[in-house]
Image (cartoon, rainbow, N blue to C red):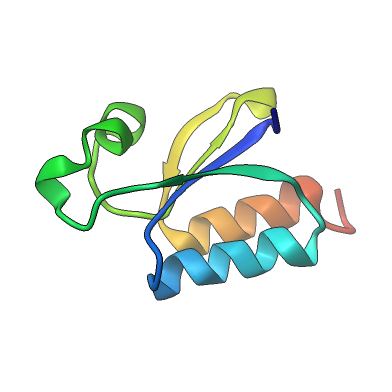
Length: 84
């Protein structure tokens, strides 16, 4: 099991941005596909406190549910990128 987990929705452009960064950094992650309906996104709500995606979990670094694609991309670059 990978240390990184991504809660995502197929076709979500914000999720795609995060997945591109994960691929660019050659990072393995477990994907959790969430339901289309926000009302049914109980799993991601338990993790992050909200129902939007993407949400990143990085157990190794104590990240339990980071929302917002721009924040996730910046975090991945800082933590796993060339400058890390």
